[in-house]
Length: 361
Image (cartoon, rainbow, N blue to C red; front, top):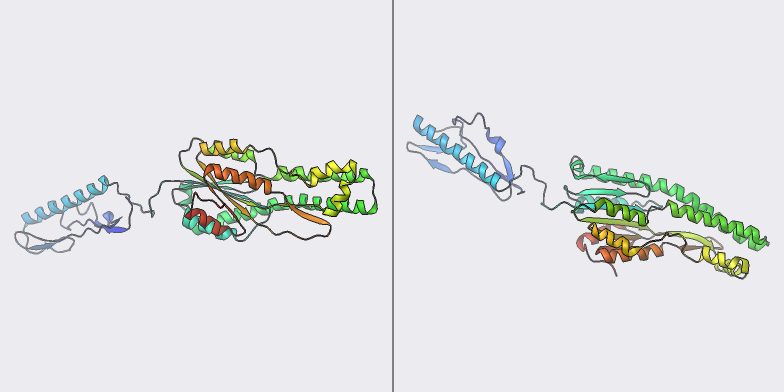
């Protein structure tokens, strides 16, 4: 039983056991309990338990009061033990939970700090375990270790790890992204100056390789969900997974350039495959993934984080994360989690807290 009140069992100073059991050693917090020793009447005078002086009592009465007070102490301690009293108070008593925080992002957002702050202050309890997944690494925060740190220390540590890893991931991601951008510019320039079809096909091969590189770089895939399901399959503790997936775009030729490419029979099929189909996603079995998560008591809460794009002449920025959005939305439906589309994470976390099984339609 956990609580906030105070209970004090106080022994008379003349009691033989008083030297061995000091009064303040029994001062413990108990919910709505304030046990006060009352004024008592002896045969020869008044005695106030807890006072430092006893008036008009003879040796026999003194022994009687010692036995009396010691009996009260033993009975009180016994009642506390029987009721399951704990000498530590950790706030509201709840069953332990597991949390998975996964940030699949290529651009760090300062508002992550607000979301992590809300998570540790209002969602994560002291008996809960946290698994942090960044775009490149995994970190485990066990409850027994987190109790040794303040909430502010945890917030600072987690946000630092997210920022550090997202920035490292972003540097690799941006290298492939910039190379892809330059390739699209080369294709556009080749058409304008009348280069050979062979030159354009070579540019197509380069673009395709950058697609593969980014695909392999991205951590969010079916294998990751399989690994999480296996990790928690023998765990009877409910697990909530909060997945923050930042919207992704890729550069493709403008509509005018695509029309010119499609007018050439030797380039039409390849241009359609590279620039108009979703080729960034590995095979993903939605039903199998959702069933495995359910078997491991994992519910998915999905935040699709918005992102602004740049405007470049003769280049279109096409969203290519919409297929993954559809896949994750189906997993949310099957696992009974939640879904939000926003650029601000903290309100989404708050909504999941208030409506844990209600998702945005």
